[in-house]
Structures are given as C-alpha cells and as structure tokens.
Amino acid sequence: MDKIIRWTLGVLLVILIVFVSVFSYQLFIERAYRSSLSSTYFYSCVITTSAPLANVTLFIPVPADPSGNSPVVAGFSAGEIGGVPSSWDVTLYDTGKATLVKMTTPLITPPTGTGPYRVNMTAALKSGRVIDTQDPVNNSALFRPVEKLVQVPCPQGPVYGGNPVCHQYVTSLYADYQTVPDASVTISETLTGRNSWNIFGPESNEYQTSVSLQMSGPHQGWVTMSGTLADHIGTYDIP
Image (cartoon, helix red, strand yellow):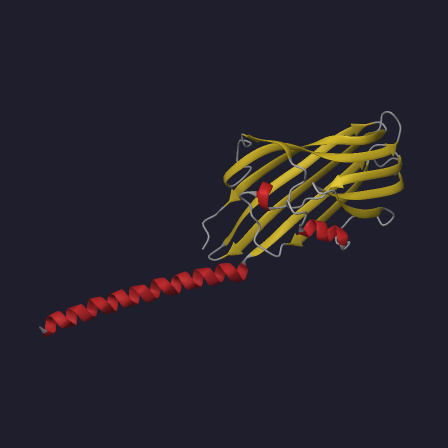
C-alpha cells in the first residue's frame, strides 16, 4: 500500500513539475515577446526632375488607414519627415477617400552639370499599436484610394520571406508645373509596416507597398500611379 502511495505521489510530483515548467516557459516566451515588440512604419518619397520646374503644385498620396490615420500622416503634420526642402510649403489634405500632402514651390532647379535634381523624403515612425501586416488594405496604412486591386504572382526568388501574398493596384496624384517639353519627372513612394520582436533571436513580419509614375514635359491635372503590395511577409508564429 505504501509503495502505491509513494508511486502515486511521485507521478503527481512529476506532473506538477512538468506543469510548472511549461507554464513558466510560456510566461517567459510571452514576456520576452511583449517587452521586445516594436511596430514601425518606414516611409520614403523620391522626386526627381531632369530640368527646372516652375510654379510647382503637387498633391501626393500619404499612406493612411481607411479612417485617414497613420504615423506618416502625423509625421507630415508635425514636420518629422526628413528631407523636405525648407523652401517648400507643405499642407495635409483629407479628401474623405484619401489623405494627400500638398507641396508647392515657385521653382525647382537641378544643379548645373550634376545630373537630375533629386528630393528624398524619409522617416521611420513608431506605431502606437501592432501593425496588421496580413490585411493592410482594410486595417493599415496604404496609398489611397486603392483602386483596381488584383492579386498577382509574387516575384520569383528570395525576395520575401514567409508566405507572401502580392497585389497590384493604382492610385492618383495631382501635378501642376511648367517646364521644357523634354523634361522627365519621376515620383515614387514606398512604405513598409513592420512588427519586430526578439525571444531567442530576432523575428519579424511586415508588408511592403510602393507607388510610382513618370511624366514628360509640362503637366497639369490628375495622373495614375501604379502600385504594388506584398503582405504576409515574415513569421506569424508568435505567442
């Protein structure tokens, strides 16, 4: 009888130790994830021109969620976007369907003999919440309005990690400026929304989107930008 009791107590003790160990491990994993979790938007906007532009007015899409909110919008509002020329006037506009940044300047002049003039605006902006990298169209910042969204095959090769899903779409930009007929003007924007953490090593998931266009000669009016989107990038094996 004593042997049965000792055996039973031994089994219960082993079960208790295993339970405590599993619980402690799960608690460690969760705490390590929460304490190291960081959600960040990485934004860039590049404008290039091969010739001087006069009386420039641009309405450029700013990445925002369907409600018009994002750290990028707040960054423009607070003047936290690096690389914006000090002589440019910058104002945010909410159209109801999209958030645009209006940029105006009397003159853009490429330096003589140094090739195209290039403005590179960038920012790394913290998000106050975990970024939805699986369904950014409905829940995260994108260049809006997102129109003609279609799923397409992702590029071949080790371009993205995990099991990405890729799309193409279009959005709109307004440009008004005078220039010579053979001038080439390019505008491109990119955005990456990334969640990163470290438990036993660095891990992350993200989505990437970009829009771009090229214009020739003087311009006045709305123009379509071609866009790409890749989501579900990285790992989703998280606590």
